[in-house]
Amino acid sequence: MRRKIVAGNWKMNMSYEDGQALVSEIIHLYKEEANSEVEVIIAPPAIYLQSFYSLISKEKSFSLSAQNCHTEKKGAFTGEISASMLHAIHCQYVIVGHSERRMYFHESHEFLRKKIDATLSENLIPIFCCGELTEDRLSGRHIDIVKKQLEESLFHLPESLFEKVIIAYEPVWAIGTGETATPDQAQEMHHHIREFIAQKYNQQLASKIPLLYGGSCNALNAASLFSQADIDGGLIGGASLRARDFLEIIKSF
Ligand code: PGA
Image 1 (spheres, helix red, strand yellow):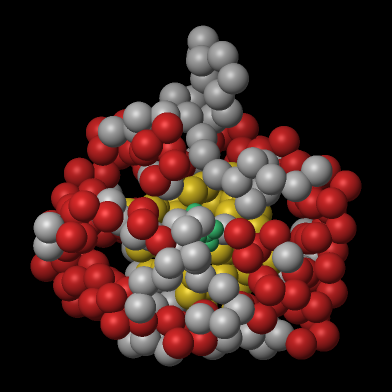
Image 2 (cartoon, protein in one colour; image 1 turned 90 degrees about the vertical axis):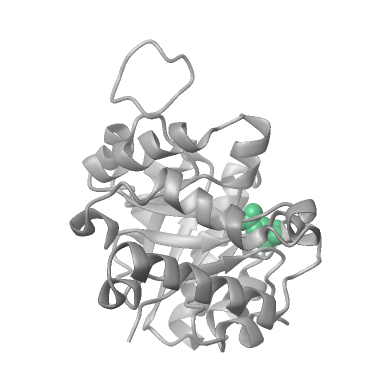
């Protein structure tokens, strides 16, 4: 049995007060209604992480993720935050390779590989995002594109570190667009990702890695996505900003 995970990526949204209220409401609804086997990860803006820890620290199914970190431990990188700084404030996960960072901040495969190493060296778990652009899918190259993303930024890891990683497949054309991948499209890619892991490492490891789907996943479509054999949960953007919607997604397994 693989872990079931729902992660909320808030991006650069929510005021501090609204964010606190949202986390409290999600915890409240989760306790009332959800199956406690589902792990919930909340990725608010980094500046909220430390104070939100006091809200979730007693909740065993909840953890916090950063949306980004730098490759280096310390130094002259104005505005950046290192993995060790995140670890020190009890953050447990870091989203690495989100398409918005690849696109707007020009993060390369190699830079992402260094981030993966930086997170794991501080005992943080990376949630590694991969996914193709519209034109890649239209030209039938989507599976090769995702394979390359995995090969270039993740497959250098030894098995003992790779086994910690969470992977999120997020087709770029589905992020924030309201156009979700169909369950078949998502399952096809997740199946390929698991195959690639099995080829690189082994079947046993491949069968353990949580593979999340992200891209306009919402309370209405989550159940059909999560019922697919290789989909172990979701990385949720827009719908993670509303407690009721987020909870319905958590309840969709
Ligand atoms: P979305 O975002 O759910 O708003 O499409 C997902 C993501 O960017 O992780």
